[in-house]
Image 1 (cartoon, rainbow, N blue to C red):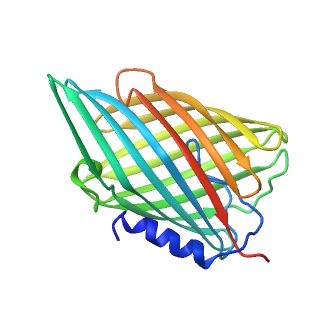
Image 2: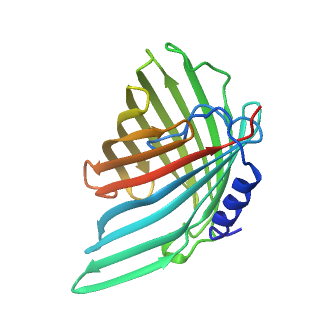
Image 3: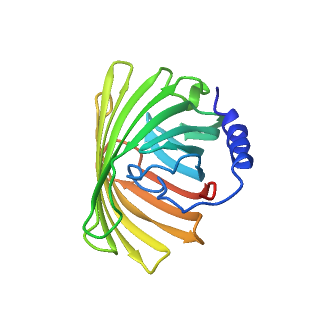
Length: 257
């Protein structure tokens, strides 16, 4: 399956699940993912609108726009299946008096999440693990060029009803090289619908060196089943993208119990 089929698969699942259930936590935005799994037989669609990345290398300034998509399906108990990809990407390159652009689709990944039984009450600790395989089926400018395997974990503690502290740790293995990510996040709710957070991403890449990003974002719930989000990260240091930013929308679909 290439990433162009992601939208078709998402649409089929949406029409197959017409009624609502109690909403879960969404994986967007921020580093890591929710420490809860979707209820059995339900799904969520989380869509970037799009993501923006800016990076300067080899005398060129690259700007990349990515419409990243994530479909989550509850399998029952603590398990959740995930399908992700980007059906549309645009790369703009400027430098040395030249300008070019390319449009295409990215790689497709499948994953399985396991979430620990836990409570959403104040003072509770929860965690989840996610393993994914990314297939090299994207266009040349927007893919890894080889299969990638990732294993990550998110740990979350809620000191009270308004605050949450999260730590995300992840390992990516691509072409025999390892990339490590460690990202602490502090979030605070304002009222019942708005969550704001700050985040720091520390990345060690065997090929590109150490990267450090810092920033934050917001998530706003509309009703019980729709969420809008916005975020931005800026580079601290010499390596990595100089800016990452994005807008997104997440929708939960499920059957009534």
